[in-house]
Image (cartoon, rainbow, N blue to C red; front, side, top):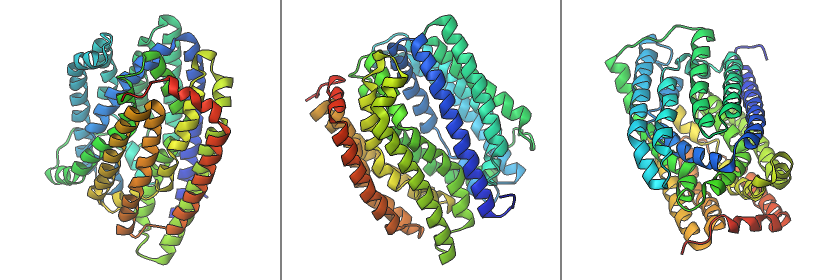
Amino acid sequence: MNGAGLGARLMRSTGFTVLGYGVSQVLRLGSNLVLTRLLYPEAFGLMTLVTVFTVGLTLLSDVGIGPSIQQSRLGDEPSFVDTAWTIQVLRGAILFALCLILGTLAARIYGDSRLETMLPVAGLALLISGFNPTRIETANRRLVLGRITLLDFLSQVLGLMATLILAWTLRSVWALVIGGVVSAAVRLAIMHLLLPGPRNRFHWDPGAAAELIAFGKWIFLSTLCAFLLAQGDKAVLGRYLSLEMLGVYNIGYALAGFAQALASTVMGRIMIPMYRERPPGDAPDNFAKIRRARFAMTGAVFAMQFTFAFAGVWLVGTLYDPRFAAAGGVAVAAACMNVPYLVGMTYDSSALAAGDSRGQFLLLLAKACGQTLLILLGTLIAGLPGMLIGVWLSQIIAHPVVIWLARRHQAWDPLHDAIFGGLGIVLTVLVLWLHYDSLKVLWTFVPPLG
């Protein structure tokens, strides 16, 4: 475990990532429980709408700085990383300017004038985050994540403390908005002051910029699709649910999404370097090692996902006050909805590790088109239950495209997919049967629109 080889670094990095994310989510859950008692459900619904816009802008402008540094042969060159940082800072400034402009539009779309001032303030967090040092991505590239995990933990603790103090003082949704800005500022300060390595400076290398743009143009298009995948449900429901019900929905969805979010974090930090150093098509031994890692990761995520699926109603009833009781049914349904995605989650990174950002874009495009169409159709036909079924079906329909991309980089493992696909079907049916009565609450959120 103290070695410098890929296996040792992979084990350490995976451990740090899982530990860091687990502690982070415990802190987030604890603060969320306090916040639900200091604030009202409508505040969480309003903050969900703000998040739709800020996350949307972040994703729609992503040019793949992190993956570029992780996969490029120039990823350790100062000229390359400083050019990447310069692009990142410019992007943050543009995002803030767009938040200033879009506040009025958001208020008109969702019929709440408070969004006109809340969105520009929330946009300050995007401006601040643009200055985060690329030393974070360098540590990910080298699979040296111990200090990053510790500093992320420290920044989160301080940010959550600030948010709780604001909530206690203001008793308003503004506590969540300002808390997000304070959290971004705290993380920036901690990473700049305590993360070792060369400091970034403004620099422009035409060759580095050309490589970043060539790789990032497909990441940019991919994140347009990622926005639809991650925020499409909330963007649609925000038009039809009350702010109170939207807040309840978001709490249930976030609880069910713990395993998926952890998987995405691990994939982003671990799998790209692993595929880069051990291309599965280069040798049978490489494929075997990646297969073992893939089985371990998918098995662990399945265990967590179905723990939330089976215990979702009980968890919400135990942790939250009665105003949020309906979130239990949402947590159960959402946990089952995302199972097909988990089966193929380890394949995307094989494309990015090979520099094939175009291939990942085509995969996300297929997923986004299918999910958006089925969300709209499902909501029209059967309200919220129809929407959730639409997301589940879209993930199944998209899996052949996942296989196509994995085969393109010789990463597909049919044994893995067959085992976890079959297990997912059996466990999903069992969960839905056990929680049939609790799932009836989903019909109360929004009626069929047709």
